[in-house]
Length: 151
Image 1 (cartoon, rainbow, N blue to C red):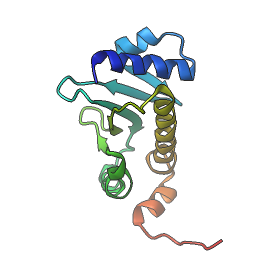
Image 2 (image 1 turned 135 degrees about the horizontal axis):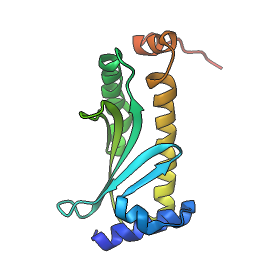
Image 3 (image 1 turned 120 degrees about the vertical axis):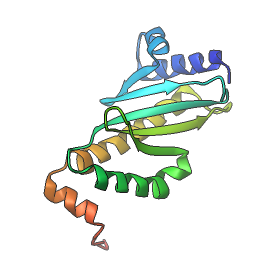
Image 4 (image 1 turned 60 degrees about the vertical axis):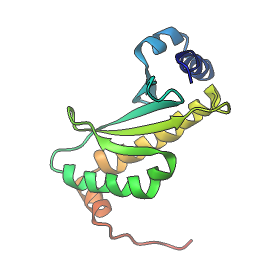
């Protein structure tokens, strides 16, 4: 994929979601999707891919080790099939989801908008249930002791 196709995809996404200034998005390679900062990257060394990073927020002090374990589990069980990884940004300690997106002829602005919305839902889960949850709720999730109910 050329730089031109990358720019074209950004314009398509902006048209789908109703952002009027696509050139600003091209220049900054940054969007805000449902409250999350989303960065788009295209590297000439990997011309057939787009890298999308979703910034989910900071880890509450004292929870880093447990959150890191939960992120590793999620990487193995959820994100590996999507070519995505949760990671901690070394400078800020924020949780970031990095998505490697191979670009083919079927990738459109509509597809990217749906993908952004999908991962924004993941971000809300991480924020509400892990990053910003009360201590009691966090300890229940982090313990791994789950009770399943049959409905």
